[in-house]
Image (tube, rainbow, N blue to C red):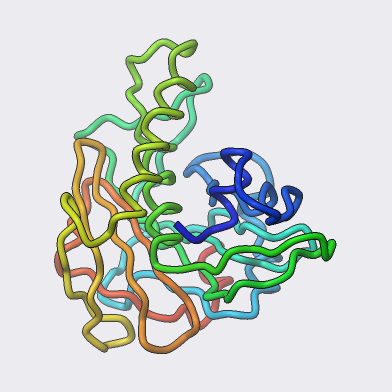
Amino acid sequence: METTGRVGAHGGGTAAGTADASAVQAREGVPGDPGDRRSVDGYLLASFPWYGLDGAYTGPRWLMQVGAAADGTVEHGATGHGVEPQLRMGRVEHETATQRFAVVVTVASRPVRRSADGTGVLEATSVSSAAWLAGSGLLACTWPSQMERALRQDWLDQQTALAWELADHLDEAPWSTLSLPVDGVPTDFRYRESEYGWVLAGSPEEGGVHIGAYGRGMSAYGMGFAVIKNITDYQ
């Protein structure tokens, strides 16, 4: 899959510049994560439009976190919708009966380019990049709460590797095609479900971005996406 985040997260790759790669890792912000993730500043620095659920959705909206390269260029970010999962005692509260949210990931469409330090190249982004970020994001906020803390990282590593592999094969099972509107234009997304929730990814005709999304308790069918006219509305 074509994303610098994968190279950084797994420590491999070619001369892609590990500093840049690690700076764009696939962690767009866990819902409920403490820190400065709610700052709108990073979103305002992006050179591409942000996407969220369209006006048909009237529930809560909240900021998450942006991912930037080593030179500060914003590469991706996410916005949340619905009931935000909360961290309690170092674990995510996500009772199936109450967890209801959808997260939209926006990834800048980038060609192959030189790294900030000029020592290598960064791979192009693609719809697989959005699928990878969405898949890993879902895992980060839906890991089994009954799992021992010592086993959590092993589980996350295993499941993240699987999400990585799945994002590399969007034309194969368990992915299917789901048509959803983006700014009112029907757009084909690759879609899959799991016991933890659903993931989808696609590329609108305009905007210069790839869109990923993940959620639980909110059906992806019937959703629509649109450019966020004022990102500060999510604060």
